[in-house]
Length: 120
Image (cartoon, rainbow, N blue to C red; front, side):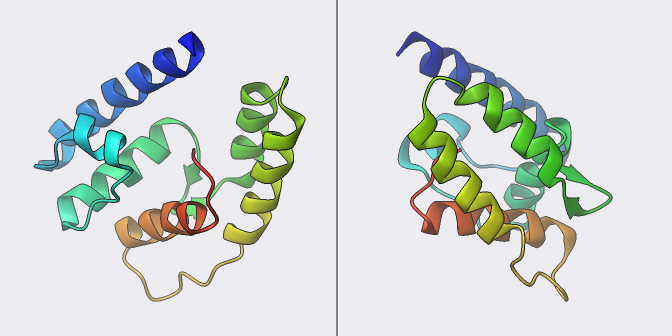
């Protein structure tokens, strides 16, 4: 439970940093609590910013290696979650994002994970 709280605090800090950079108006704490995906252009770019900062997006493409490495550490003691994470990554890394703006692409990946009932 403590680890989860630490991770949430880190996520809030990162998203608030990106919120300032993008001019997003979303309430980050509320967004995380309610698992809401931003719909404003600035909010979507806040998600892209956070994904870039974590190394999950590189050159406007999903960085499956970085995400996989992160998940192996994050879920090292939870094989069921790691398996679900790997399945979700395999599925969501192949979605068609052609024609989408870069911020919309980042949100499409997050939405895919959420629709797969996987929490990042």
